[in-house]
Image (cartoon, rainbow, N blue to C red; front, side, top):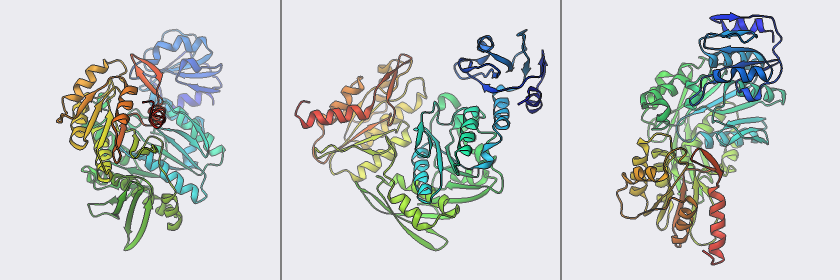
Length: 486
């Protein structure tokens, strides 16, 4: 793309040292810059790309987009009001507006995004569609998986990935849309065809500062939809009606307790899954799912509704639901062979922990034992609430370290303990030992929940990442217990 075209797109405040150039690459990370690239200096949460302009130039950047007044770099410098907004607009143009060539599904909410996304993927693939997913657990292009740094990556990454999807003949892209992605403008130039609201509760307040800002950020996603698009909204959520009112597109509601376009009725709930009836336009659809817990009905409902509105045959939808065994680290049942259940889950908010523990309590034959912690350098207010939830619903809780990051793990644990209203609580800072302790005390009929990290394979302590997998620890402990060595 010609630099003159890029200047036209971003509508700059000022351009200095202009020379026409052919821009071959776009970058926002100076470490990745190649010859002939345009570098966007972006201000982030923890660092500022303006500090790395000289590094980008030394690596071959031929021009730079920035928000500050330009110093003499010897290359074209384009001053804009927002480098991040400019990056989004230029990326969409540079890669040929790929979202317009795909059916884009955006799923937002505090909990349930990943399970809903991967369930939809299974249904649509059963229908013969070529599907990509961008989620917390990775980016999937059919069967090809790559890791992602954020739930909703930066706009350049997204546009480049969607271009690859188009080139590979992908039909549909399912995206988890985070509040960070909305507020930081990462999705502004993506043409969403469908939007799903799962639920909203306290989360990310270290970033948003107030729940009001978090809520309004999520609402903005639905307010920006084109009128010919379709939204699916959970009206059982206390804020569901706000999303209905804010949506600017065609809107369908789903729920179990409230009247909705797609109404669910939960039948049996067992350790092997759940039965659900979905009523739409006077037709009742019988659904069976191996997903554990009543809360999963709220993942099944929007997946069913959206698939039906995409024209997928209801029998294919039902097959897609019944054959979907879940997502790693999300209500993940790990076989013990020792007479007790073990569930691995990503729950790291009060609401997610409540939904998980409530669901498992309904199923459990014996005691409910829960191991959990809370992340450091994140919303401190939720820690006490998580302690209260776990101690109210569980028979035994072991409070441990999660990802303390730059905080003292013991200080985090003490804040969790402030909310505990039960004497059946113990503290073990070492997460491996905490998991071992929970499995060691489990008896026949009990259910052990290991919550907070789910699919993650690391612990972040003192600003450094160390390999750590809850699953690996659990499986190793189970093996030792079977052999009588723990």
